[in-house]
Amino acid sequence: MDKKKRLRRDRLQNFLILALSISAVYLFFLTGSLELELPTISLSPSTEQELADSTALLQELDFPVTLVVSDGHSRLYRQLSTSDSAFTSVEGLWEDLFRDGFTSFTIPYTDFQSALSLPGIYVSFPNSVPLCILSERLGLPSTDETELQRLLLVTEGEDVLFYHSDGNHYHLSYTSLTASEVLATAEVIGGSSCSFAFEQSEPTLHPLTVLPAELPQYPEFGATTATELSDLLSFFGFNTHTTSRYVDSTGTEVIMESSRKLSIAPGGRLSYLGSTSYAPDGFTLSAETDPPLPELVDSTYRLLTQLCGDTAPRFYLSDVKYNRSSGTCTLRFSRMAGGLPLLSGDGEAAAEFLIRDGIVVSCSYLCRSYTPSDTPALLLPLRQATAIATQYEGMELALSYVDNGGDSAAVSWLMR
Image (cartoon, rainbow, N blue to C red; front, side, top):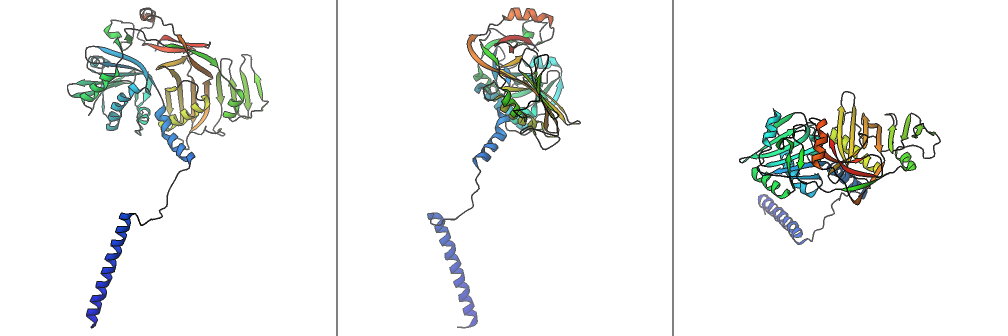
């Protein structure tokens, strides 16, 4: 055999061997005969929990809302929380709206009021909430700190318009939502008949005060002061056996340790004063000196839920002051129950945190626990409440639980 024929034969053999090898591998994969040892990546249970918690808490951050739906002729009203199943469909609309983004145009208040005559969905928070917080709750990362307190989606033909306000200024945005989506959502919400103050010729009230035709029933809450000193000392990083403590003339117990101070007033108001030089476990909220607001709120909410335990009613974010030039942020949280704010009679927030360069340097917390009772709350009739409100011209009349430091918290009409 000459050299050229031998070379051609060798090439043919090599080709057949390669073809047979590929066929064998293919058959092995089809029949499952070929087992490959692939490296696997698994998370420890603690790591899995940490990853779950990293997104769950901000999404669990709750808010009380006033919800009004309109078909263009009548209105239905509900007072509920954002965790209520009835509110899920509304947040579904917000999710689409926030994901697409919107451009806002400043409008006069009268345009906002006129839009309320159109079919749509109106939502009001007790306080303004940054857009980035509402977006993060829906799993949409955002750094937009635009304040929102009143949100109104209305249909105009096939179009959907988005009106919104921070409580002082009013804006209009065009959306890509469809009228059918909004109308279908409004149809299933339900509620009780209501009207706005501007429709009832109540000139002394804020025109957007919601006036229910029938007052809802709410239970009273039993209230107690709960201060387990040893647990609090441990939580704030103090020596539980410290002797550096005294009671001042007001009955407030004061514990000192180095440059830090912890005090507990007779009514259960706890105050902590620390520093950036030492932070107890969990008090360093971020390694950054200028962390995003959602990160601060998320970490602070974690800290607050650890402090109060699982028995207290939920908290909602009631105020934000973020001064980036000084690296300080003040976050205030209030309690809520039955879709209503649960406020302290002294006007103070249930919890307040001062954060500097990502570290909690001071905070206050009202150590009160609440338990729902079978006793219905006695609520002042709406006509009497509006008569009393005449001395607070321009204020919004709203329902809220109030804790005056006694053994119960009842529903009252408040001006805000």
